Image (cartoon, rainbow, N blue to C red):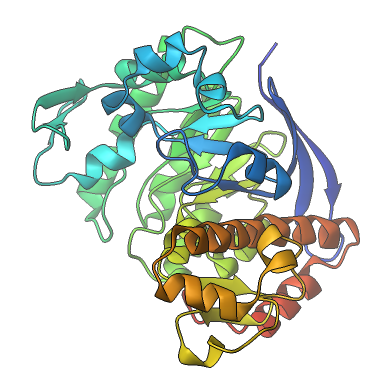
Length: 376
């Protein structure tokens, strides 16, 4: 019995978008959904209780950072990442691959794995598909990810093909290395750059390995929106309809809505808390920079259509004051709002799908929010 299973619950007659339920050892979650990122076993500025209150389901933790600090053995000794951070819902860990491959100046890639420098003390470290899964087994998330290479954009075809083939070999090694197959589900990751045949080939070969779920990687790495959507579309076309699909590292409103149109079930991004730290807020009327002087004496709620703790209790003027005074409470409030905003966006998307009006919902939402091409 797989620890993580998926069922499709409705297909929108207008758009073909779908809703579903992801069943995990730590509870069931409705899809499509947005997953907050808790890099170091904490979503920045938010408590687990606040995550429950804003409707979060699956929360991410970062394998690379927890491996470096405090170490996977400490997390395991605590009883796993759920007990360590006191979050009782489903969790997912990435493979560490994205962080490793972002260290382009210090890494060395071989068939066995990657050698790179520890960002904390400069020591040389080695991460392989087996080591990544071993660390994730110790951390204990419900969903764990294959170790892959996230190549830059653009990349020439020869490099993209070699990297994709190596990612496939690493995927098989990682799948075989899972020591907790009854408790943790490994997802394979589709790579292949901006090459249709490579993307489709990678997806087909991963499906032959029979992963319980599949992710789409190597997007949102500097390419334009149309290129990104093209890569996602090619990747998902070859994935099985009855298993979950996870688009990695995506959190802009237009990207989330487009992903749902392509039957993506899960998305994650650090965006909501990252932009909150700079005073940027996503609202139903569009983007707000709370630092602007116009909000200094604006005693209206941040977003009248939002039900989060911030919008229920505080005004734009107060948020403006907190941000200008560099008070941490302001960052907390804005992080709560932005995270709730994206979680609610997906709740509204699910409702529209069930009511067979997703295309209309998507068009209306993008028109009303008036975001720029970045989607926030």
